Image (cartoon, rainbow, N blue to C red; front, side):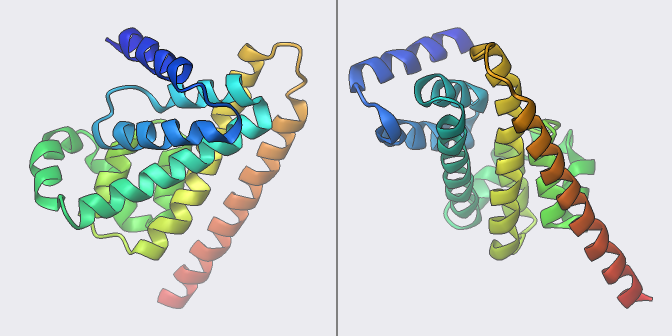
Length: 198
């Protein structure tokens, strides 16, 4: 089924005939569909962006789509469809109870971690954040940073496959610096908060 969906998405691109960042007119709605129902992996859109726009622009487009779709899903789940999401997805979310606990405990930092490391599907991360009533401002910053981290990491992997002649050393080095900064900020915030609690 996944290959059928991928073929359908490629057909949609061919029919739409969009290039450059105009492809966002197709990929943002597809990102929202993916965020709501998870019918195809988000990696499909990342690969389409990178193969169509190149590495830097493709990753930027993927980050925009991932951030916008996750925000739409979060606000839809929080407002209009909270009961439906809880009924429909509660069974699947039980598998991820410890990660939901991490979201409650660490808030936005838990989301950054879950978006970076593909332990839990992206749509369930958005559903969990809405169901535990994460504050919108916490969701916003952690969604922006978490999606950046996720897409950057996936971009390193996909760039090596799609553009084997490209030196991804700069991309990897910059990502390591980015992660070290995130870890340093998290540790500073965590220990500052811990000292205040004592």
